[in-house]
Length: 337
Image 1 (cartoon, rainbow, N blue to C red):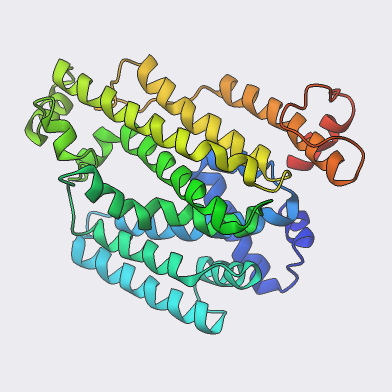
Image 2: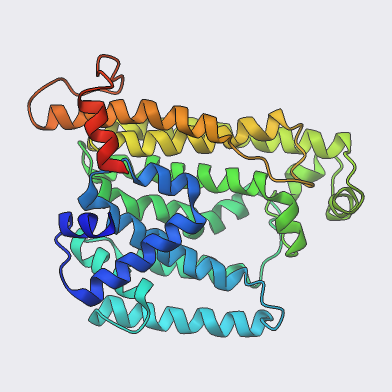
């Protein structure tokens, strides 16, 4: 399975193949929704997405290390070492860190602007120093490096049917929407790490401060002021999803089912949070396996329609309604397994 993807991408060097395989393992282990969506891409594009995810995951794990011996100083040193390896890899290729090797190769193959990786590392360093954001504008500044640039890194891999600069604002918005969703889902876990990503002015508008959040976390109780703040943050996040939506039609048709699936499933996390009564300070809300399977099944039909259109055998589009399960959709399902 991994070998077929690497073959399709034209990656033949054994060291590179091992590096990409490591990134794929990280994606499969930690990015359940993201990994499922990635399987809907043409096989040859998947290794690049795994490389982008694998590097981001590696850096994020350094910042959020659960090693009791890893204080901020040690995490900072590890992050600085990774940054040095990144700079060397982007400049010279190769290196000792598999995720960097794969990332540098992906950046070269797809012509990804190196500034996006530098901005990402700046945001990761910020997580070691900043524990709260006074205003949404301050949070947006952080999310440029932690989320928007992920969408911008992905865009050359996905391809577009419009000039790339036209699609870039929507790709950046989608990265931000995904991260805002994670912030809402993980309020309690982030609080345990000493961080609050919900802007202080939004919380304060409802009479909420860090002390109240800690009280709710410790007692397992709800508070109407916290619920009101969480609902407002959810509404803000949904507005960013709407900003991102037009960008889906700007992507290469064979990439649209992947990103549309991620869009729907991440948006489904917001639905799960609301369904669970905004209990994010006490538990993590999840999209059910049945829901993921239903969305993936619809995406398979879109994959089949897009690939038929690419071969000149049928119309391109997003509906895929006329694709029979025993024909192209079945072939597509075999391709993403």
